[in-house]
Length: 156
Image (cartoon, rainbow, N blue to C red; front, side, top):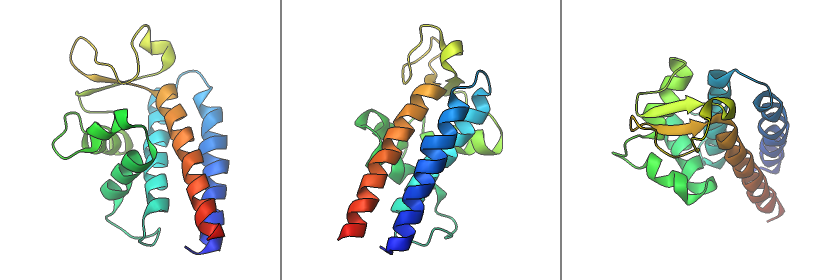
Protein backbone atom coordinates (compact mmCIF):
# COMPACT_ATOMS: atom_id res chain seq x y z
CA UNK A 1 0.00 0.00 0.00
CA UNK A 2 1.16 3.48 -0.80
CA UNK A 3 2.60 5.00 2.42
CA UNK A 4 1.07 8.40 1.59
CA UNK A 5 -2.38 6.84 1.24
CA UNK A 6 -1.87 4.90 4.45
CA UNK A 7 -1.00 8.07 6.36
CA UNK A 8 -3.90 9.97 4.81
CA UNK A 9 -6.44 7.26 5.73
CA UNK A 10 -5.07 6.94 9.27
CA UNK A 11 -5.14 10.73 9.71
CA UNK A 12 -8.72 10.94 8.39
CA UNK A 13 -9.87 8.21 10.76
CA UNK A 14 -8.21 9.95 13.72
CA UNK A 15 -9.46 13.41 12.80
CA UNK A 16 -12.98 12.67 11.60
CA UNK A 17 -14.23 9.37 13.04
CA UNK A 18 -12.41 9.41 16.36
CA UNK A 19 -12.27 13.20 16.76
CA UNK A 20 -15.19 15.03 15.16
CA UNK A 21 -17.71 12.19 15.42
CA UNK A 22 -16.97 11.91 19.15
CA UNK A 23 -18.01 15.53 19.66
CA UNK A 24 -21.29 14.96 17.84
CA UNK A 25 -22.06 11.78 19.79
CA UNK A 26 -21.80 13.72 23.08
CA UNK A 27 -24.51 16.19 22.04
CA UNK A 28 -28.12 15.52 23.05
CA UNK A 29 -30.59 14.64 20.32
CA UNK A 30 -29.68 14.37 16.64
CA UNK A 31 -30.23 10.61 16.72
CA UNK A 32 -30.67 10.14 12.96
CA UNK A 33 -27.72 12.43 12.23
CA UNK A 34 -25.55 10.30 14.53
CA UNK A 35 -26.57 7.13 12.70
CA UNK A 36 -25.87 8.74 9.32
CA UNK A 37 -22.33 9.49 10.49
CA UNK A 38 -21.93 5.93 11.81
CA UNK A 39 -23.09 4.39 8.53
CA UNK A 40 -20.78 6.62 6.48
CA UNK A 41 -17.91 5.96 8.88
CA UNK A 42 -18.32 2.20 8.60
CA UNK A 43 -18.29 2.39 4.84
CA UNK A 44 -15.21 4.64 4.89
CA UNK A 45 -13.33 2.08 7.02
CA UNK A 46 -14.31 -0.57 4.47
CA UNK A 47 -13.04 1.66 1.66
CA UNK A 48 -9.70 1.94 3.46
CA UNK A 49 -9.52 -1.87 3.54
CA UNK A 50 -10.54 -2.25 -0.12
CA UNK A 51 -7.82 -2.99 -2.67
CA UNK A 52 -9.77 -0.97 -5.24
CA UNK A 53 -9.20 2.78 -5.51
CA UNK A 54 -11.01 4.83 -2.87
CA UNK A 55 -13.04 6.51 -5.64
CA UNK A 56 -14.20 3.21 -7.18
CA UNK A 57 -17.96 3.11 -7.59
CA UNK A 58 -20.58 0.45 -6.84
CA UNK A 59 -18.58 -0.93 -3.91
CA UNK A 60 -20.65 0.39 -1.00
CA UNK A 61 -22.15 -2.91 0.14
CA UNK A 62 -18.86 -4.77 -0.15
CA UNK A 63 -17.01 -2.05 1.76
CA UNK A 64 -19.64 -1.66 4.47
CA UNK A 65 -19.91 -5.40 5.08
CA UNK A 66 -16.13 -5.85 4.95
CA UNK A 67 -15.63 -3.25 7.68
CA UNK A 68 -18.17 -5.00 9.89
CA UNK A 69 -16.67 -8.47 9.42
CA UNK A 70 -13.02 -7.44 9.63
CA UNK A 71 -13.07 -4.68 12.25
CA UNK A 72 -16.14 -5.12 14.48
CA UNK A 73 -16.69 -7.76 17.17
CA UNK A 74 -18.28 -11.07 16.21
CA UNK A 75 -21.67 -10.08 17.64
CA UNK A 76 -22.12 -7.84 14.56
CA UNK A 77 -21.13 -10.34 11.87
CA UNK A 78 -24.46 -12.15 11.58
CA UNK A 79 -26.14 -8.91 10.50
CA UNK A 80 -24.11 -8.59 7.29
CA UNK A 81 -24.58 -12.16 6.05
CA UNK A 82 -26.72 -12.66 2.96
CA UNK A 83 -30.30 -13.28 3.97
CA UNK A 84 -29.91 -12.09 7.56
CA UNK A 85 -32.91 -10.30 9.02
CA UNK A 86 -32.25 -7.60 9.81
CA UNK A 87 -29.41 -6.91 7.43
CA UNK A 88 -27.25 -3.93 8.36
CA UNK A 89 -26.64 -2.88 4.77
CA UNK A 90 -30.20 -3.07 3.42
CA UNK A 91 -32.14 -2.35 6.62
CA UNK A 92 -29.80 0.18 8.25
CA UNK A 93 -27.14 1.71 6.03
CA UNK A 94 -29.18 2.39 2.88
CA UNK A 95 -32.36 3.72 4.49
CA UNK A 96 -30.56 5.81 7.12
CA UNK A 97 -28.40 7.52 4.48
CA UNK A 98 -31.02 7.92 1.75
CA UNK A 99 -34.30 8.20 3.71
CA UNK A 100 -33.21 9.34 7.20
CA UNK A 101 -34.76 6.28 8.87
CA UNK A 102 -34.35 2.52 9.11
CA UNK A 103 -36.47 -0.42 8.11
CA UNK A 104 -38.99 -1.73 10.65
CA UNK A 105 -36.62 -4.58 11.56
CA UNK A 106 -34.28 -2.04 13.21
CA UNK A 107 -35.10 0.47 15.94
CA UNK A 108 -32.74 3.46 16.13
CA UNK A 109 -32.35 5.38 19.39
CA UNK A 110 -29.93 7.30 21.58
CA UNK A 111 -28.91 6.25 25.08
CA UNK A 112 -31.37 8.80 26.45
CA UNK A 113 -34.19 7.28 24.40
CA UNK A 114 -33.24 3.64 25.03
CA UNK A 115 -34.28 3.52 28.67
CA UNK A 116 -33.41 0.04 29.91
CA UNK A 117 -33.09 -1.36 26.37
CA UNK A 118 -29.63 -2.54 25.37
CA UNK A 119 -27.75 -2.11 22.10
CA UNK A 120 -28.13 -5.19 19.85
CA UNK A 121 -31.09 -6.51 21.83
CA UNK A 122 -34.65 -6.81 20.51
CA UNK A 123 -37.65 -4.74 21.51
CA UNK A 124 -41.12 -6.27 22.09
CA UNK A 125 -42.03 -5.62 18.44
CA UNK A 126 -39.10 -7.79 17.34
CA UNK A 127 -36.92 -4.98 16.01
CA UNK A 128 -33.17 -4.97 16.64
CA UNK A 129 -32.26 -2.02 18.86
CA UNK A 130 -29.29 0.08 17.79
CA UNK A 131 -28.12 2.67 20.31
CA UNK A 132 -26.19 5.44 18.55
CA UNK A 133 -23.57 6.07 21.23
CA UNK A 134 -22.88 2.34 21.74
CA UNK A 135 -22.59 1.73 17.99
CA UNK A 136 -20.28 4.74 17.73
CA UNK A 137 -18.01 3.37 20.48
CA UNK A 138 -17.63 0.17 18.45
CA UNK A 139 -16.93 2.25 15.33
CA UNK A 140 -14.19 4.20 17.14
CA UNK A 141 -12.60 0.94 18.32
CA UNK A 142 -12.81 -0.41 14.76
CA UNK A 143 -11.17 2.79 13.49
CA UNK A 144 -8.35 2.46 16.01
CA UNK A 145 -7.89 -1.17 14.99
CA UNK A 146 -7.67 -0.16 11.32
CA UNK A 147 -5.14 2.58 12.09
CA UNK A 148 -2.87 -0.08 13.62
CA UNK A 149 -3.30 -2.29 10.52
CA UNK A 150 -2.48 0.62 8.22
CA UNK A 151 0.56 1.64 10.26
CA UNK A 152 1.85 -1.95 10.24
CA UNK A 153 1.44 -2.14 6.44
CA UNK A 154 3.34 1.12 6.08
CA UNK A 155 6.30 -0.30 8.03
CA UNK A 156 6.53 -3.45 5.90
